[in-house]
Structure formats: structure tokens, C-alpha cells
Image (cartoon, rainbow, N blue to C red):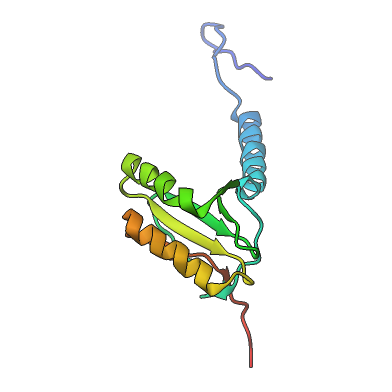
Length: 140
């Protein structure tokens, strides 16, 4: 590291070399960009396809997963349907702006998803969405 000296008095001029700091910040940023998509949690389900663009919201949401067998999960925690309403009502009391996103497997019975949506409505949720995979661009 080069240190400049004042010619007149012979004092050392303090300066910070920003090049190495910028290199470190770029490396950290690229590491976070690569690892951030891997941090999503939940069960792996085969989602149906839907609209090409995603709908995004600023509020916090809870992901409810229904697998092809009909098991219900909140994140990775399996929960019985009879306990779902009480657990979600407690979450709603803590955060009134909470929204729900249902991720139903493609092979899940339609009636099972509708039953869960009915439970959510009676629990007091106003914001309920269905998660889908975006459709591919099809040229015909």
C-alpha cells in the first residue's frame, strides 16, 4: 500500500484504498445473490401452471401446502385440518395484515383445496391466493 507524504511538512497523509474493499463487497453480493433463491422453505409440490407474470405483495404471507395425497403443511410442519383453523386464527391475531398463499399439487383433489379455502374464510382471512408456476411462452 502506497502512502503519500505531504511535500511541505513531511507528514503522512492518511488514505484508504477502496479497491480491495469494493472487491470484497462485490464477492459478498454475488454470494448472497446465489444463495438467496435456495433459502425458500416448504414442501416440494408439482404446481399447476397459471398466468405468465407473478403477483407480488408487500404484506407478509403464510404458505399452506397441500400435497397430492391431501396432507396439509404450514411451511414444513404437517398439520391436521381440524387444527388448521385455530393455528391460523392465532397467527391472524398477531398480524392482522397476514395473507395466505395455497400451494396445491397439480394432482390434489380440487375439493380439498376448496375446503381449505372455506376454512380460511371462516377463520377471518380476507387475502387468500393460489400459487402457480408461470406458463411457458407457447408459439402457435
